[in-house]
Image 1 (cartoon, rainbow over the protein chains, first blue to last red):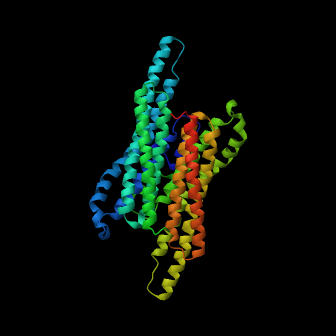
Image 2: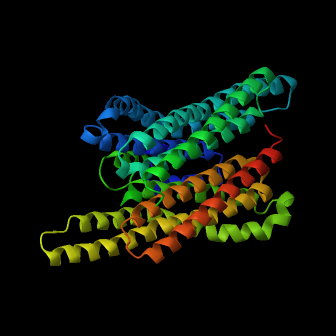
Length: 210
Length: 210
C-alpha cells in the first residue's frame, strides 16, 4: 500500500518510469496534507474565547475534515489501482476481430473507472478549498499561514486530479458523457482559481501584509 | 525523522495541534513529489527517437532533479527543526531585564534561521517550475499530465513556503533585511504565477484540449 510507504519511498516510487503511481496519487497526497493542516487550524481555533463567534462553523468543518483526510489517503492507492487496470486492458491481445472487440470494451470500462478516482480527489479538494477559505477569515490568526498552505495544496491537488481526468477521458467513447465530465471539471477549476486568491488575500490582510 | 514516516503518519503529525510539522514541511513534501514526477518525465523522454532534439536539455534537467528531490525531503525535517528553535526561544524566561534581552536576541537569531528553510524550499520549487515548464513543451506527450501536476505541486510548495517566510519575518528586527526578503519572495511568487499557467496552457494545446 502506497499510504504505508515512507515519504522517501513514495517519492522514489513516483519518480520511477512505471505507469503508477503518478500524478493522480501525488494529487491525492497533496489533498491529504491540506486536510491535515485544516484539522490543525480547527483545533487551534475551537474553545478560544476570541474566536467564540466562529465556534459552530469551525466545529462543522472539524467534523468533516478528518474523513476527507482518510478518503484522500485511500485515493492515493485507489488512483494507482484504477490506472493499473487501464494498463492491463491495453495489454490484452488484439490479433483477431473478437479479441479487438473484447479489448476495446475492457479498455472503455477501465478508462471510466480510472476517471472516478481523480474525480473523487478533485471533489474532496474542492470541499477542502472552501473550508480553507472560511478558516482563512475566521480561524486563529496565528495559524493562517498554515491554512493558506492548505488552500494551495488543495488547489494543486484539484487541478492535478483534473489533468488525470482529462488524460483518461481520451479513452472514453461515450461523447455525451465525456462532454459532461469536461464541463464539470472546468467549473471546479474556475471555482478553485477564485477561492485560492480570495483565501490568500484575506490572509495577507489579516497579517498586515507582512 | 519526518521523511521516514509513512504518508499516513505524516498526515497525522501535520494534523496535530503542535507547532511542528506545519505548512513549511508540507510545502517541502509537495516540492519533493514535483521533483519525482519531473524525474519520471525525463526517463520517459530520454533515448526516444521522436524526442531526440530535446535530449541534451532533458539530460540537463535529469542531472539536477534528483538532487532537488533529496534536498526537499531533507527540508521537510529541517523546516520543522528550525521552527522548533523559535518555539524554544519563545519559552525562555523574561522576568529580569537581562533575561528579556537574551530572549529577544535568541528569538531574533531563531527567526532568521527559521526563514532560511522555507526560503530554500521556495528556491528549489522555483527551479522545479522552470523544469516542468520546459518539459511541458518538450517532454513525452504521454506524460504531460504528470508534468502538469508537477508544475502545480511546485507552485503550491513555492507559495506555501513563501507564507512561512512571511510568518517568520514578523520576528525579525532588521527592517532593511526584512524588506529585501519580502521583495525577493514577491518576485518568486509573480514568476510562479506566470510559469504555472504557461505550462498548463502548453499541456492543454499538446493534448488537443481534451
